[in-house]
Image (tube, rainbow, N blue to C red; front, side, top):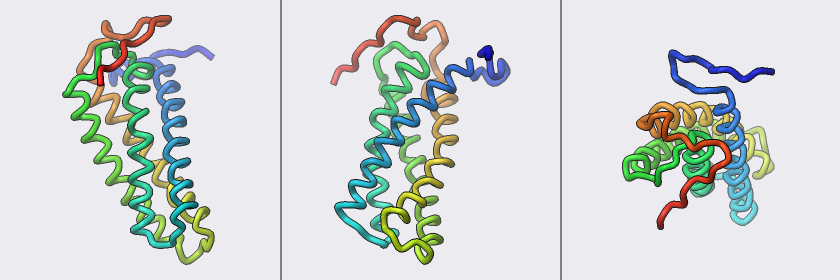
Length: 166
């Protein structure tokens, strides 16, 4: 299968960029769901409000790795993180978290009468929120957070990105 530009009109780059984004998303989702399950195990509840709090902690944990993996690997930006990128990323995570928690709350309310097991209930609710949130996240990162740079600042294959100063 040959990988070609997805759409020159939209400037989405190659399908490899989308594939990298999906791999990063999978890793971040594993972090997110893993932490959510630890919280559900440690603090079991059928209270949808507590589930939203636990989801917020778990989601924020995955967001930290998301920023750096997407910046340096998915979108191949090699400059150090800027305040503008950081601010845009924090705003997008806040929007995604509101969206995720809203979807999680709706799914949790709908599924609660039908699923007695706290872990199954929490994970089923989370699955819906993750699926919808993944599309929103990609669009925000691709067209807003990392859109300001030109492709000439992309990290050439075989080189390492700089490390961020803390």
